[in-house]
Each structure stands twice: as structure tokens, then as C-alpha cells.
Length: 226
Ligand SMILES: [Fe+2]
Ligand SMILES: [Fe+2]
Image 1 (cartoon, rainbow, N blue to C red):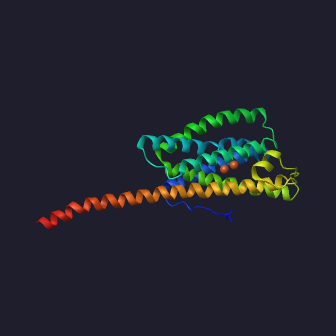
Image 2: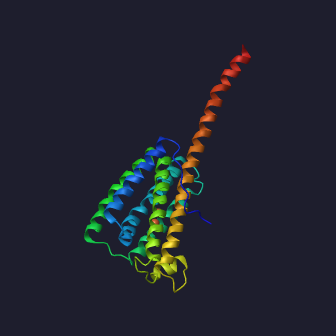
Image 3: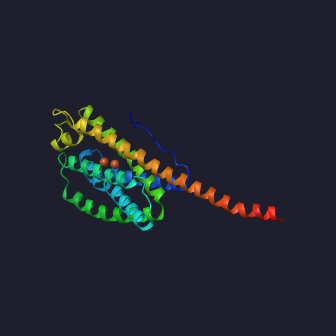
């Protein structure tokens, strides 16, 4: 069972930058959308589907260049991008973006695509940590959305058929059920991206230990010869 409240405590400067960047974007989203959760979901899901595709493509290219196995990362990331796109395909039946929102979507896609690719090339671990924190916020937002639906502040409605098919939901499922399964998806992406950042840390740590062991060996030999 997925723990919805998981939070990764920032452990270094890169994590703190990732968390501050996320909180800043959250503030912008809260200010712009307020409680318009359907519109918020449409606009933000257009952005959420970008990192998996960018990261998947960059690892794919690296795997080709270095002739190295990807350890299954490419498929996981491309699946994440596809899953986020299905969130969008679902919410487009719930809220139609306004003209301003469509303009924001186009600008945001361009800016985010370029920015995320640059971050990924400079620091792969920070890029995954950022997505981990984005997904923590996504879980929070969908919990708030669910609360509004459960308390009747936002009217519930039948689930779009695209969602019933994709998540294999009962035919009488409603928007509440859809928000719950999407929130589970976001929690899954959160855990995967945080763990990818952790794996990169562990890999770097091992490399450091290996290289310091290599540096020590010649000294040892030198000592023996003397
Ligand atoms: Fe999503
Ligand atoms: Fe997400």
C-alpha cells in the first residue's frame, strides 16, 4: 500500500534547491489557480508529462553513446510520461482550458522542456529530486481536490470513459475514484524519482570509495618496496 504522506527530508544543498524551486512553483500555481482544481490539473499535467520523456530520452542517448545498460530506467521513465499524459487526457474531459491557460501551457512547455533538460544534463540527481518533490505536491493537491469533492464543495460527476478504460474502474465510477487512482500514480512517481536520486548518490559514493582505494594501493606498494 502506498504511503501518501511520504516526504523526503532534504539532506544537502542540491535537495534544498530542489525543494525551494518546487515550493516557489507551488506558490505560483496556488496564486493563479486558487481552488479551480480541474483547471489546475489540466495545466499542470501538461508539464508533469515532460520530465519522464526528457529523462528517458537523455538516458537512452547516453546508453547508446556509452554502450551501457540502462538498468530498466528508460522504460520506467517513459511509462511515467505516458501515465502523466493519461492524467491530462482524463482531466481534459473535466475542465476545458481557457484561452489564457492555453497560452500558459505553450510557454510553460517550452520553458520547462529546456530548463529540465539543462538541469538533467548538469545534475541528474537534482533533476530526479525535483520531480520527487513535484510529486509530493501533486499528492497534496489531489488530496485537497478529493476533500472538495467529498464535502460537496465541488460537484462530483461520472468518471470520463477514458479513465474507466485506462484504470479499469467500475462503470459507475465517479470523479472521486479517478482522483484517488491518479493520486496513487503521483505517489508512485514520487517514490521512484526520490529513489533514483538516492541510487545516483549511492553510485557516486561507491565511485569515490573505489577511486580512494586505488589511490591508496600504490602508496602501500611503495611502502612494501621500501
Ligand atoms: Fe499527474
Ligand atoms: Fe505527477
